[in-house]
Length: 62
Image 1 (cartoon, one colour):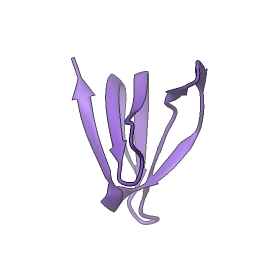
Image 2 (cartoon, helix red, strand yellow):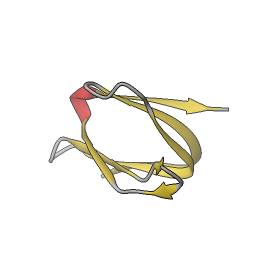
Image 3 (tube, rainbow, N blue to C red):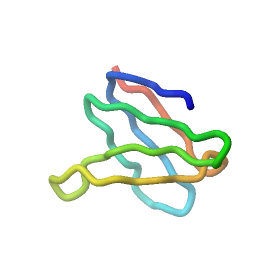
Image 4 (tube, rainbow, N blue to C red):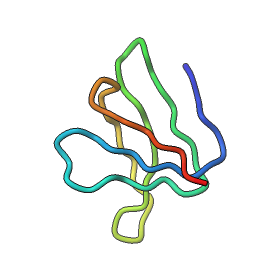
């Protein structure tokens, strides 16, 4: 399991028009299962999202 810790990320998932925003959080990968796990803020609340690794682009924000 790989983890990117402590940061702000913009996560683009193919098939979704708008990117997800992870603020001061982490994104965890499950390469053996083929997905990422992260908690973006959606409508003011943090929600669990799992996305396929091959359809996801993660951009670290400054």
